[in-house]
Image (tube, rainbow, N blue to C red; front, side, top):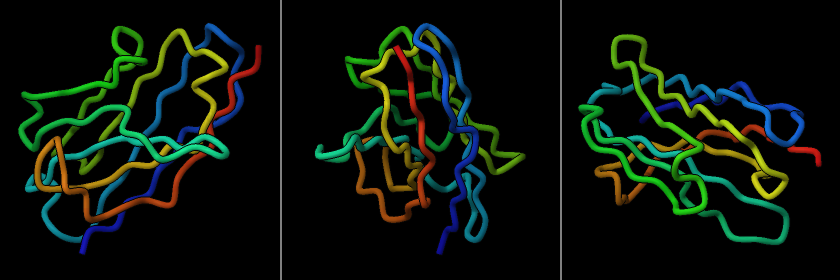
Length: 119
């Protein structure tokens, strides 16, 4: 089992920045690819970004390319999502997840953190 706890969400104005963190415990963190997902009200949960267990490979949703950066620190068992130039449409609950590869499957999930971007 891997336990994941997200933090860093909040309310920010459009154009602002936030950094989300996801702390992992349990099984060896560095064995897993990590992903950030988001779910807006009435919408499906979509992937935002993912990073391989080495940190060498990343992938992003087209809607966040050039604005968001995913990174990980295996020594701290933590994955980050730096979000810049935020837009109101980025408003959602953000979840981190651990899985086999950057394309899934993702088997372990955090509880989510709310990000609200005001216009």
